[in-house]
Length: 246
Image (tube, rainbow, N blue to C red):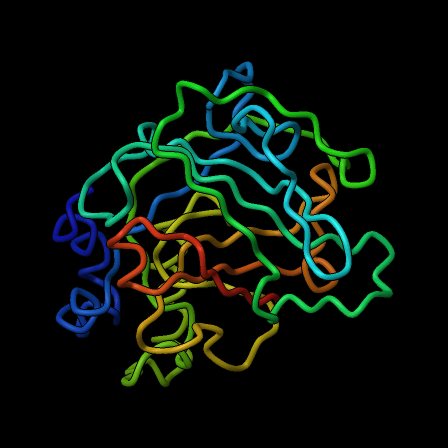
């Protein structure tokens, strides 16, 4: 997508006066689209059985097992200035809380666990333990796009203070997204009144909406946001992720 051509779509709206600002805060993002295609070994997907090395020890946290969230094959992702690896498989797991009565909290360190496999040739389908085998599975595909800050809490400057400007800005951001799920960009949420990004050295890695079929329920039907430190992403180090929901 060409940024200039995209912004020209809004040249007759009030948002056109802030084109320089929009270009300055624009970030690359990768939309995640659900697909009806069949499941392939090491293919990108949500839920189901992950592809892991043989004799892989299922990850655990201090209260029990992690649940498999999904896996992303970076070779399937558009690689235009995203900062993501060009190849390899990233598997994400979430600390399981089936009854909602434990001490788990989505903002705690370790709520999200990741495994990155640079060599995918030796991975095999691995059935999750029964206690964390919930929800359906689906393949996913990717589309390159751009993203804008979700709200005024995510940037130092926010020029959209009138109802007309806010509406025009909302239309512009919505036009960038065909899906609520995406990689990179800015985190989006439902109810938060603050920037969920842990700090200036962190960026958004993955944003996902709740989904009944996948048995995803983040903060009573809101969104899960996962973050990574910029320097760790450059090194393809996914060992220290943070998260928030709301």
